Length: 98
Image (tube, rainbow, N blue to C red; front, side, top):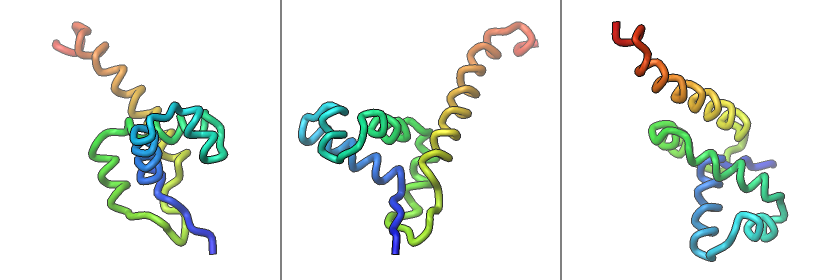
């Protein structure tokens, strides 16, 4: 039976390993047999809003079926980042304060 990892828990483990062993993303990728881009994608998930990280972390790890995918989380992060980049522009516009 295939076991699926929680992408947030996995990303946290990668980050801890990188810090603990003083590795670059490229070195970490080599140790895990993946590309450095893959490592970057995983680590960027940790930039999600804190409440979202806690929510996904609470789902646990080693799932029998895929509950949430890394791709879904990346899409969420992109849409969240885009939304937050619009807010400062809105707040500084005269229409926002009218």
